[in-house]
Image (spheres, rainbow, N blue to C red):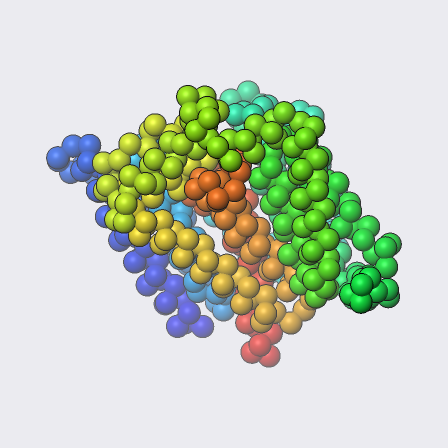
Length: 423
């Protein structure tokens, strides 16, 4: 137990050194003289992480030792790029990091047994669906998508919290119904097919994902939500047929939306050929591709690129800015960090004995990884561009808070799993 926490502390200090070097490099790119500002900002950003580490030494001594350092690494890279792009927002981002750490503290104190969440599965479902669909009715359209709720100067992206609530519901629901859904009573072309009535949850989630796509004009949130559901459904049932049917349903729905709705056509057309309207609709993705190409293998150096030409670079395209100034090597490093985080989450799911904990770990990890892959895929033109944020790296309070809650839940699951192995 002490070895785990010492390993975690050593990794946090390593990330701290990397962050300090990065912040100082950015500051030197602006002026030849050093100042205390980088040290102050790095200290402000890292205090919550070291506070969580000390908290783990008291309340979660057997929690996974890599999850917190990986989260600190991704957060420090994102904040470093924010210092490079929009330095006036760094203090606000650090405030959101602190609030996120307080959220993890609340999980440690009041949710020591994560299985208690099973008792509130239908409440989580109601709140999650409400949060997911609320922007369609009351949201503000920004850059073609309705993802935000605004109250005065404050804005909030409800889908960030809604997806975690729905993961909790799906984990509890599939724990109860997974066995039933896995029974194949009929055969189609010699392939075992479950009874038609068991496709109800699949069709329901498909309809909700299409509503998000149609009313909120956001392919990314729709794809993320349905992808999480398919991943959890496959793990709960072991039936490839659900995944195949689900992918076919989503593809059919997306094609239908492309034929009917102009905003979907625009997104797909930009993806297929952004050069046809470089000055307007294709400008954002073209500038992203230019930035990544300009970075080469090792980048232009921090502060020496031209990421400001990309609109919304500090939110939707922070990966492109990092790939320009740290190169392919830096971009692959970010991908490796996300994949390592996912590896720890999936490994935790394999080690967890109870079915709810296993499905919850799978759902949370899939959420984190799918969101990262979708936004990086959009920035590199691998898939159509979406408006979701890069976990822990993009600027935004709702994104930071939801991902810290996700981190806290994984840490609690890993703590209970380790205790169960020891007993």
